[in-house]
Length: 390
Image (cartoon, rainbow, N blue to C red; front, side, top):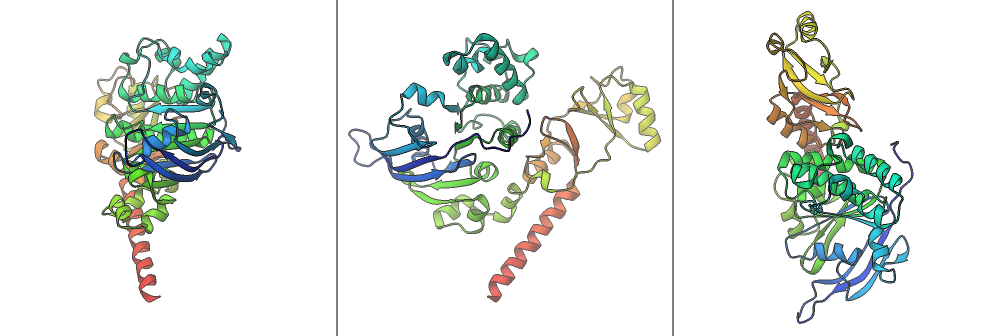
């Protein structure tokens, strides 16, 4: 799928939206107003119980507002038929919420099926979505959710939410239940998809680092979904609006700048020796010896990195498909430099970087990240010097 130049998302506007539950004195959400720009990711971040999930769920009317107005692409959401509204809005939640007795293909095809698409169109769309989220249809189409890892289930959840090509995607702590490495990979995957799809995404999290990584804008919310600050991640990091927001930013704001810088912003090394899965281990050993190198990076038929193999492991290897060790952690061009640093610590050295469709794009080295941190610190010190002299 080629990258879209046009935005497929639409603007969402919430005007004086309030939710008051019967028998309670205080509103759960009180007089909330916000414009979510078309084609952008807006992250709601705040403590548990502050109302962020309630606010998001009012957009697709899983929770009905008590008062106020919500428009989606100019249409009044409260006047639309609720089923019609929800089919225009993708919804992804923690632990994916997949139907356990449906296969992966059936889960992804649910909404297109409800919309009356013919079987062939649904099948084609399911395959396209699986490919888009990095799951091989031949391997995963007929599996059931229990046969998938947590990360794979979340990918299916995102594919299902996007299957009918809705302009709006709501995501409620979708990556909260997986391990940190998988979580980082899923975040990268979402950012990669967004560069292609340009949906309007409202994303709820309690993790400020996740908000900084994913958000075009962040809304830091307090009690009753009061908006403490609504701005770009770098503006919030540089100038927290008050002590509560500063508490969210926390210590090490300069290190958090690493979550604003992407791997695509730094220079990648292009000198790694690579080999295909079907190449002869003996031939690859000769190349390593000739170039006085110790490692080869093995790529699959789609040029996706799969494993590192050390020279000494080639002597007894019958195939590159099983030699060496599988890659535990790969970063993409969308990854943050913090992700890259964590991956290097896990891998114990340089880490392969992948492009838009998982293909090998180069490697990132520890020296590159360290020199970038040093440059950030120098820039930070210069900014403080300028401020002091004003």
